[in-house]
Image 1 (tube, rainbow, N blue to C red):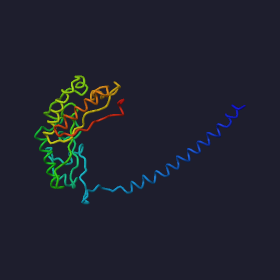
Image 2 (image 1 turned 60 degrees about the vertical axis):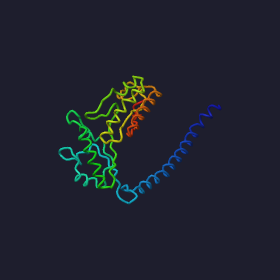
Image 3 (image 1 turned 90 degrees about the vertical axis):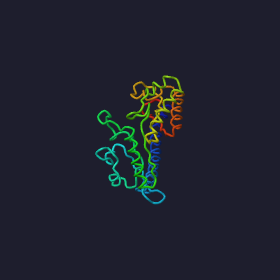
Image 4 (image 1 turned 30 degrees about the vertical axis):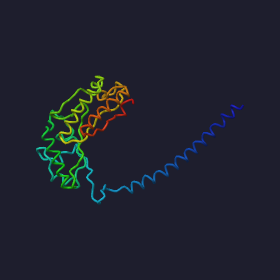
Length: 241
């Protein structure tokens, strides 16, 4: 009979808990929603610097054609119209038009890349009084640019089990990146690859956490030695870390 009583009381207790939890969730939602709305109302429409002027925080990559002329050179007149406060970040200055096939549209060579970087810096110097802008490139296994050195992929470099070799490899890559006026590279990939179904395992340093961290530290040390910043990339949605 006790078991029967317990079974009879269970539905009532379950509905009570459901009501209590439902009230609690509704109260939480009612308190959180106005807070999010108030923050959104307080957010300024445009970011400003301490002098009260518009800040140059525009990112340019796939829309490069908007600030280039027909020959692929930087056009200050177009830039003034679209980015009067200056350009904050210019991605991959070595490519001609953003995403695309370098076979169909070859990338810029060393001189062309330097000319573009210098032109953007001159533009910002006139608009903002400071030439510094952030440029980034790809350098997973060497600088991914026309005329630069391409080394074996990351997984192959890790298979050498030679940290000193890795340091030498990325010292060369960092030197080539900085020679073209770029300060930042998107590398290394620090995912720990343990699922062979993932299609980018070759970009990682393998399945061992300790060795992956060691390779990444060597990579970053080589970049810092050449005054080149690095941003470790991760694709955590696809890897098992």
